[in-house]
Image: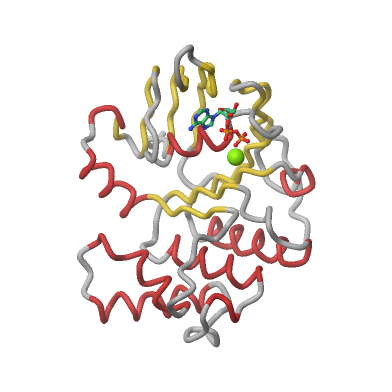
Amino acid sequence: MSTPVIELRGVERTYGSPPTTALAGVDLVIEEGEMLAIVGPSGSGKSTMLNIVGSLDRATAGDAFIAGHDLATLNDAELSALRAHTIGFIFQQFHLSDGVSALENVATGLLYTGIPPRERRERAAAALKRVGLGRRLGHNPRQLSGGERQRVAIARAVVGNPRLILADEPTGSLDTASGAEVVSVLRELNEQGAAVVVITHDNELAEQLPRRVRIRDGRIISDDRKVTSWAS
Ligand code: ADP
Ligand code: MG
């Protein structure tokens, strides 16, 4: 079998002193090309786990491997490089810059790759076309609907062709129709080969995905791969 894209072994994260525990020993393996939901109530540790997987935060105990790299052994520059080349992030609040066009927002996703500016813009335009926004390249985020903004954020996440897409409540700020659109874009990206991890507390969304990992009080309480048909 190939190297998993994510492997967590006994991962713990505590904050402060006296310590409060956000993750209490998580073991999780995600293979290349998988798509799954991480489901759990507010405060259960979902974002903490995603931030550790995305190397935005470090575990206080245990081991985390991303695409075979032991995160504990990488320095900050190496972690930035791993993020730039391997991981695309999508957040509930989009995190777009209102001052610049959709195209410029997406092109920033390639800032740390060494690709020259002109090619960054060409690739950004292609990524926006991929998410159905080929006619919105010059729009400012404020001129776009919520669903369109999240699709700009998805284009920025995937412009470098990451093997791993990490989405933290990507539909949390969207109405049902826009949310469904965003999920269908994520599914297409998965069909094109990326592993996609979607944090959600929307059970309906989770039920559409081929694997569901449920987390509570910092622990995985179930990991269910029952085969479901895609909702259309
Ligand atoms: P979720 O994303 O499932 O809502 P989080 O991972 O954000 O949960 O939080 C898990 C637990 O860790 C919560 O109890 C939260 O209050 C705590 N926590 C998260 N981030 C911090 C932090 N920076 N400092 C202290 N406690 C934190
Ligand atoms: Mg969260």
